[in-house]
Amino acid sequence: MPDAPHAFDFAAVADLLVCPVARKPLVHPDAGTLVSCDPETRLRYAVEDGIPVLLPDSGTALAADEWAAVMRSEGRDPATGEPLSSDKAPG
Image 1 (tube, rainbow, N blue to C red):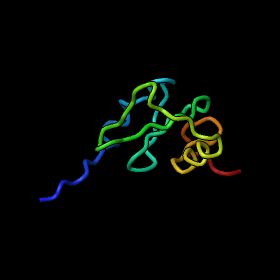
Image 2: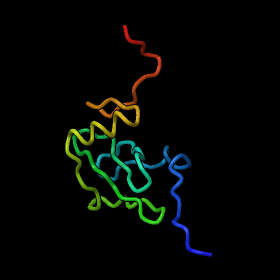
Image 3: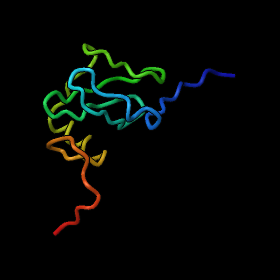
Image 4: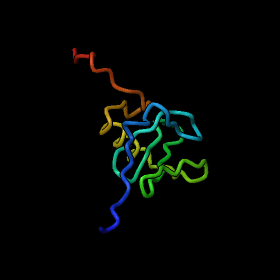
């Protein structure tokens, strides 16, 4: 049986994980990445073999436009990183 890559179950630990630098929530835009919701640091962390690498020195800063695009794709405000309220209807 070939070795299968380890899957990271973000949903199971989403409420427990935070950015080790900014202490803000993280989003999981793809299988190999976690991104801090902090607009000041905009840090991205790797997920290697199903294990998030959340060491303070391991994060790499995203460009502001790339970070904003990740926040939009994850249903968050692209300026603040805060969750967009689903009950806000366009007026």
